[in-house]
Image (cartoon, rainbow, N blue to C red):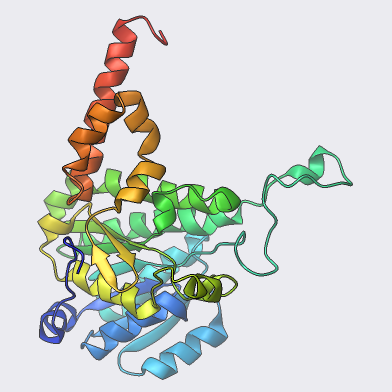
Length: 329
């Protein structure tokens, strides 16, 4: 067992956290979103709002879940749609307790999807080089919209929780999925920064993140079997739903701003060492003094937020030192 593994709550513990709650889940018609919706419904949530762009899949998901499930059509990249989603939920049920921002796309990975944004076309001029940026509209702007509306309504309803389903791509470079990775890095910054706002403590709101490694969904269908054949740890949608149940049973003040990394059947509050060495922390470590910085931060791997704050402090000091030395001024 991983030394920093966080066990999932018992059925009784999750039932206590979910019972009677009104939960909005975007992108809940299939995959990870459906698994989360199903878990809340089974555990006694008052209402599970399946917010999805596809009405056929959404209605089918509602019928499969039955108890407490409601389908509301929503394009998360549309501010108008999201406003209507929250309005309709509150009109029906009076309030919202939890918002799970799950909807996302990865056109660079899907079979028959968009080309790598740096691929050179043999015929055509610069007009044809314009990258497709829908991935930002859905993955980043859509989450910004959901978080903004959730903060607005939760602050008026006595607090609550926001859980953002992000990705391991928030921490590591994915060269052939650069735009997807960029959208996920943006979510990481949004969650961390929002969690530090005084509105969270004032209104008892927590915003947390679940970052799954490779998970079996429609988006990953093209590479999932290859990963299994190479003995790469993979997760199921239910594994990710289990991590969400862990988040919502933690005390608000302890889980606010935190991220759970999901790899295989393990959920941990730590980032794997390989991700720290190869991912979004690498450049900061190099700037801060390489071995010395790594020695100090590696001791804090058990707490992902502590690692981040330690690196941020080191980065700030390094920048000040460079400025005083006349570098970059």
